[in-house]
View (cartoon, rainbow, N blue to C red):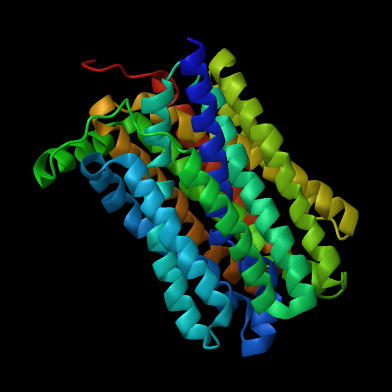
Length: 397
């Protein structure tokens, strides 16, 4: 029993470290987008393609890599994914052509997908579904820590060393986390590899897509993440532009709001285990909406407060929704269901980030907020419609 508990702790720690590296690399350009826009004479929406390209690559590759991992092995897939993405991350700061940067970020997103798409399936198989809310909460806390640390480090380094230095600082952080991930991640025991034959693998994917209940967490992933990335993509432009004119280094401190997710993600997971997924998920979406409303203020302090509330609500919702997929999917479709969730999550990031930027450019922060509010309302309606299926599906049911 003590050995099993120690192994579970090691799995959780390794996945938290891996998630930290993943999110730091994925959103590395975000805090230095204004400097990139100025350097290449770009609009905010065009500069944001550096973020959307990576999330698009991840979204496109999530389902194929998640499906292939059933045959190649989940641990092997995750390690190869993170190591190759990190190596590319160390190259990016030295690239001087914007569209080459966009293309390489697309490739980096494809590489990262192997970890993002497989992590949930690995966690369920290796730690069990009984405390999946708590486990997923810890994993999502790792993603928030990576997002916060990467953005904060990149923003501060970028203010001193330029956007090249910002990207390099994040890549070096990712390198340390990648080494720890490879050393700590245990070999898988709870998953039996399938033969590399497309028909049975695609049957698992079809099973995940045929379950109507899973469309609720997929909807939360797509619309919630789209809204989240839209806010963070344009946040620095709003803070550093008139009338606020906040210095870039101080504006980067706003990314400390990510710390809210490290608290709310595991908390929401534990509450979902105890009280049920649907009420906790709806409450988290409501908290995110409250944060959006607070950010309508024109005062820096209120914007940061709203960002903290918004971030906490979003990551609470993401924690519950991703855990819902892990326990709802049947064991032979778990990897594919997890991959589809990641497709929705990062596809929403790519599309939502662009649409949010366009809405901000056309109608300002207030208009963008109205659009994002509609997205959260639609996600909440989807959760309500699926509330009868928020429990676990057991094998053979």
